[in-house]
Amino acid sequence: MTAHDPGPDWAGGHLRSARHGDVYFSREGGLAESRAVFLEGCGLPGRWAGRAHFTVGELGFGTGLNMLALIDLWRRHRPAGGHLGLFSVEGFPLPVADAARALAAFPELADLAAALLAQWPKGARGFHRIQWPDHGVTLDLAILDAGEALSQWSGRADAWFLDGFAPALNPDMWSPDLMAAIAARSAPGARAATYSVARIVRDGLSAAGFTLNRKPGFGRKRERLEAELPGVAVNQSPPRRIAIIGAGIAGAALARAFRALGAGPRLFAQGPMASGNPAALVSPRLAAGSSAGAQLHAQAFRRAVDLVRQTAADAVLGTGALRILAGRGEPERGRATLDSGLFDPGSLQWLDAGATSARLGEVVTDEALWVADALVLRPQRLRAAWSGSAGLGGQPEARRIARIARAGPGGWQLFAEGGALLAEADCLVIAAGPGSAALTGLPLRPVRGQVTLAHEEPGGAPASWGGYAIPAPGGVLFGATHGRDDPDPAVRAEDNDRNLDKLARMRPALAVRLRGLPLDAVAGVRAASPDHQPLAGRIEDGLFILSGLGGRGFTLAPLLAEHVAACAMGAPSPLGASSAALVDPARLKRRVAPESGLGQIDVG
Image (cartoon, rainbow, N blue to C red):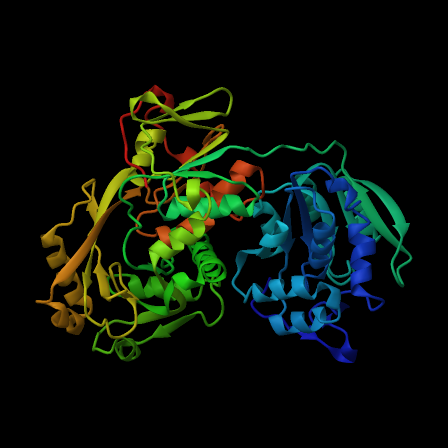
């Protein structure tokens, strides 16, 4: 993939790729072609009958027409409670206006197309998740070169749509290495379909282990190709009983993610939550360290913004925030973030000190990034929206979990104080903040943070710099302290003074206005891992974790919850392999086994 694409060409009223000199779909009828070549060619809908999960991959997303035709078929022949996972690759995404113009030719797909266009990626490189929740469909669209996308995707496809531009015009999309990668990312018995019977396609698929079958082609094409791998598809049943311990932002995000996959988890919570502040900021981390880390944090930010806007818009207090580049190395990290290609064009803007001062309404000496998509949230509303009906009576179950223990292969039991059995689960996810350490044996450490609330108009834009100052209901919220290995959630008056002192270094005029005013405060205890990366994934059979989010829970939890839910339910993860490895709890050594008897903990 190169930095510049010539873009679409509408010469003669047909959508063509100027780069490859080929049409996006047949002039004899794009929707009819999708149905005949790809849906029929992969034996759909018959092959998903009775399946709890079915996965379809595609090379060449283009306008999205193949996927829309597939979703239309799925909604008419969906197995009861079934979930359809889609994966597609596109190196040069169309502008949304051109996609809309092309899809307007198929009015019977108008409602599905509208949902796709509303979530259309704006150009950021990486993985993008698009959902049709009413139909149980999730699409992971990789804006990447095909080889990189396939190496990063964790799924196994039951069917493949091979729809790149013609092999003579785009041979890289049909290389033997790519066909081998397709086979490696396929389930037993997978089918592949394509409009092309070119020699490079036949040889590549055959060498990868597919059995080939020529069929009559569509439109002007004399033949098309169907291919099949040996083996028999296995219909794995997802866990029926799912329990989540912790109802902060991690637990709420998990509840939403499991429901999106058709599951109904039980959510247990008791005790103070680190995500109990009156306001929260969703903003990206500056690029630092590994490329996998940069990709993870950028994708998490994009996904958090999309999900909040789609599912909990009334939780948004404001949009847009400054990231002030104060401190050694911060401007360089800001530039690296801006130049990474991991954010949508125009979503980040470089500001010199004068422009930063204008946004804040006071004089500062630092440069900044303007993050147009940053969100200021009401945490309580977001947690309520995502917790949904996961607990009894629509609320998390306020039960104290004293101990968990294995119950047979893959099963788990949750016990209350005094030894009473509260629940049994086929899948248990620990999202209990610092309390996750006792339940899992993983080396998480408590980090206490206190934020201060002044009942005064904040003035200027929301801003962060390591600390932050953001609008909150009734005033301005600023802080926070960072007390490592401090598990005490009690509010401390001296920490308000510390927060004011830190604020004075970054926003002196605001700090002057706030000194002497009555101040409220909220303190919470977060969990951090030894390497400061989150923990998200499988610990052992039936036991998973989402923790170690530090002070970035509202940015990280939405995406990582989807990753954990996918791992638990046997669905494709939204994370690339390198990002999944970065957060895999297996990287840390466990200190105790959860069966070994645990002290009482508060979770939430």
